[in-house]
Length: 166
Image (cartoon, rainbow, N blue to C red; front, side, top):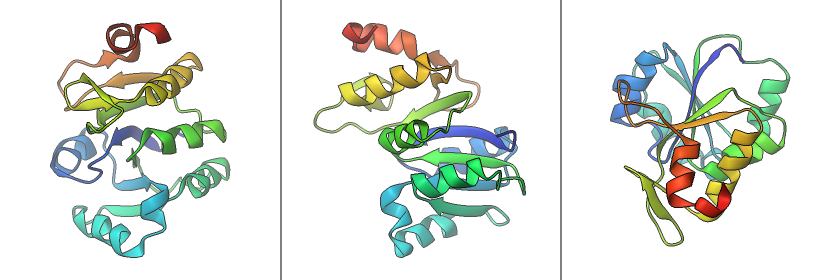
């Protein structure tokens, strides 16, 4: 996984912060979006492909295809920023054997069943449980909006927002 430079959960996917800050900070020249819905929708996938800066390749994969590429060591042709729109897609990859060293949580929007836990991150109890499980299995989970901002560890967020999960 040495060619994966950053793994980020951000519902906005390719947008200003990712393009202007995280892509450069991670020194990535390719983006992988892992999302079941987008991978099945060619039109929307193409919108994200076109939103990337010139010279930045974008691949949209479902969780199965992503894990297959990881397992077959097929990501050796560049430096990758991997974006997950949803925590459940990340958890699905994790359950299928994808065990990253760390995952950055950037933006998860508020909606019914979620509560705001950090800046622009809202989690449901299930999403929090999924992150706790990954964190307990040696994947460092942290929250960070932009480079230069202090990273906040998952345990700190869980302690405040979901104390029963600790």
